[in-house]
Amino acid sequence: MSPAKRPAPDPAGHVPGGGRATPDALDGPDRRADGAGGRAPGYAPGRTLPLRVEFVRQLRRRRTMAMFGVLLALPWVLVVAFQFGPAGRGQGSLRLSDLATAGGLNFAAFALSVSANFLLVVAVALFCGDTVASEASWSSLRYLLAAPVPRDRLLRQKLVVALAYSAAAVTVLPLMALLAGTLAFGWNDITVPGTGEVIPAADVLPKFAVVIGYALVSQLVVAAVAFLLSVGTDSPLGAVGGAVGLVIVSSILQAVEALGSLREFLPTFWNSAWLDALAPEPDYSGMVKGVAVSVTYSAVLIALAFRRFRRRDVVS
Image 1 (cartoon, rainbow, N blue to C red):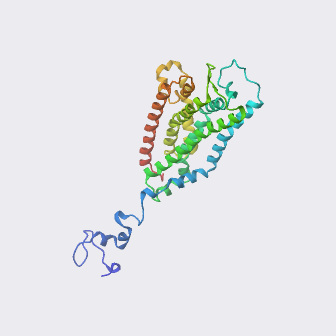
Image 2: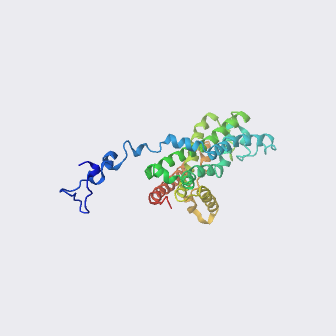
Image 3: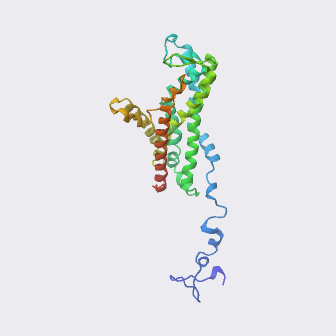
């Protein structure tokens, strides 16, 4: 008897004429065509949503281009401000802002110090907080999952791309500032703020790479908070604003001396510890504590983001 004329089995699974219905008899030829487990031929979960595709999608977005445009333009704006602004306080001034024109390295350190607590925070929050929430706001998240892309893989690919762009944002600003400062003020030895000691530029350059790496690690908490908020809302602005708000609240609490040693557990307390790396005798103890706090917070928050996304109803 052909499959088209095969009688339907009764609720007990028996086919009229004797015997019991097999899975193939119940599902017909469609099941056999789908392969094992009911998957479509050629479907491989590990090949869905490639990183290359996600990188290109995020790169073409206007907010990505606008943010990198601001980060690349800021050092040149600062150069113009120093060139046309009033003269500094003289050689006796040992503040980082007054030593910015002493050379390219001094200028790069100044640019990083003035941008790390707000501009870089906004950049990291934007890249990590907008990535999933924007898909939900466009109603495209459900279609990505229906592709089907496994939820953990979708979230992992989004996170990798967001962290990559965040790392590029944190790196490109001090590097552009180093280039702009060198062209404007020359390649000179660095003058240490506070003490006025002079360190050869060749000795400081490897330390400056450590400073950029620490600035990147210190922004992991911002990235993790923004990503956690992003998987729970369809408002990208809410996710970005929530992460920036956390930094603002942490900075306010950091100024409350009554908290004592409890302030050391705030995510922003050790953000300026990189200045100790530029001293004649570097002290990395503060940076080690800052890395421990930042990595701990970010690991817990990212784990919560994955847990929440697994249980989220994306069609609500």
